[in-house]
Image 1: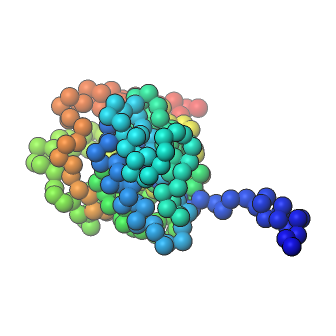
Image 2 (image 1 turned 135 degrees about the vertical axis):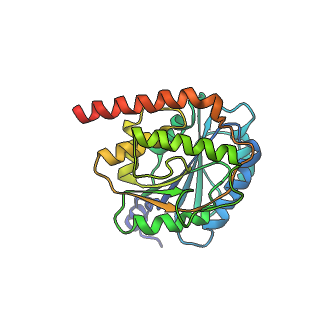
Image 3 (image 1 turned 90 degrees about the vertical axis):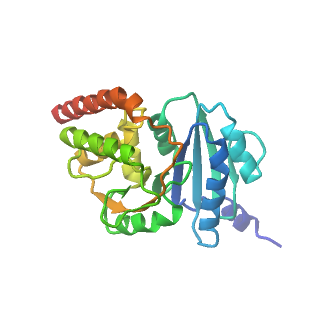
Amino acid sequence: MTDTKTAKHADARPEPVLDLSIVIPAYDEAEAIGVTLRTIADHFADRGRRVELIVVDDGSSDGTADAVRAACGAAAGGGRFAVSDSVSLRVLRSPHLGKGGAVRLGGLAAGGECVLICDADLSTPIDELGKLERWLATGFDVVIGSRDMPDSQLSPPQPLRRRLLAWAFRALRRRIALPEIHDTQCGFKLLTRRAAQAVFAAQKLDGWLFDCEILMLAQQSGMRIKEVGVRWHDRADSRVRPLRDAWPVLRDLLKLRRLARRRRQA
């Protein structure tokens, strides 16, 4: 016979702590998201880790949330559901905020000891995570993947026009913020839980320059940041249009400078 007190005590045990939260912002990613989720689930199979995926559907109009559930064999509805024995999934839905707003929403909801931000198309393969985790284990608070380090591998490289525009952006950005960081915009970043909660709670920008803001916030808070070269695959159908986005980028860079000055004076 089972001892009632023992059974009640077992039922009251807290859930094991999540090892890792992976935040995936998704805007009209119905075609890519299923492959991404299955790839991540396969990567963590039999690794003895508890991982949660948080897909933030940023006001998609193509059925992204339905594609997520279909890929994982889950019924419609909210809440958390299992992808595998070790991987669970949540889908958060919001009006269209922009990539920064979606990441902030997912980052604040994350329950893992570490939080990884990655793109919905896995431009940086999930097996590059180990490179970042090694540095986090040595005491860094934020470790970022980079396309502009000596050991970075771009396959295929970006077209020449995009490389020139990226160079111009980096030159301008370094005059305004984070001059020592080569590549702020690679969508593969790993943070400790403490760092994630701090920077996402203070983040203001909703656009794709949010990367610069959270790195500035981390730096101003005295957190240790490490930049690591990773493998990266160029997405031919990227939604970033450098000429179209030039003015919003400049506006947000100037806003970052103002925010930085206010924080220093506070």
